Length: 304
Image 1 (cartoon, rainbow, N blue to C red):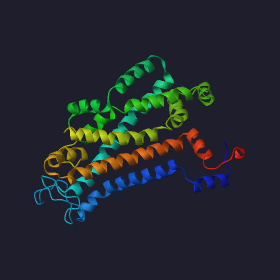
Image 2 (image 1 turned 90 degrees about the vertical axis):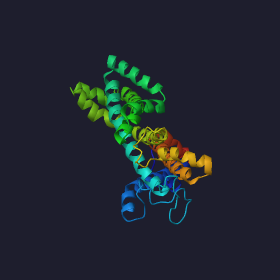
Image 3 (image 1 turned 90 degrees about the horizontal axis):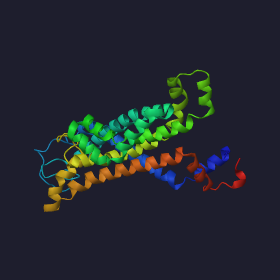
Image 4 (image 1 turned 45 degrees about the horizontal axis):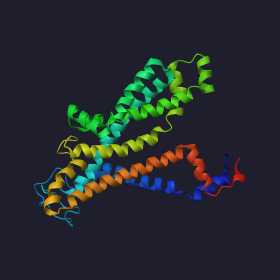
């Protein structure tokens, strides 16, 4: 289907529900990224407390002008812990998804292009990992590697490698039979040249979508690790660990603010990344774009 320039402007003037949800997800994601980047500056100018400081604060104080989100049963400021928790989440999640992407994409390309025994072996290995529950696998690895940003990222990344591998491998299998690849082979191009010049950009189109969806899932998994005491060190502000510490106050004295704000921040960030990922999927997938265009008012007679 070919669209003229006026038709494209009419489509942009009437955004679909998917477009609006993508915009919401993008705004939420940018907000949390900006919050994580600005957290040290906000602390330096006195707008935020040190998230590890608790001796000078009152214990279990409800939200007030002095402590907007209240304090915990140990005296930590909930606002500073929540803001710096976004920084810790982004550090671990970006590192984990990048590790899984760097491992999964090359393996998928090599496996799909070369085939044979290597392909069958990698398929068996990745399918074995894929069948294991992600949280269970991450918990097991966290026991082995211990706490820390890098260790938590490694524990999270293993569960996402098979997803990148399967998507890229399937695309590579379908693209390697195209005429431009066969022409490059006939001209004597090396395997590396074919993979890097002819296949890479054609098989990674769905990777950004998978990246954002995995990032949303990784935040929940990191929260689960922190809740179990297996995520980041105790002195690091992390949403899952703060939720674990808040359980005692919630059950005994109705101290709701120590649970509400970290849990709400985690939920909103996951929703934002999920909406962004779904919107990217609609934008990248040509079939979904055509369906959205058809519903935006284009008549069959305008198709080219």
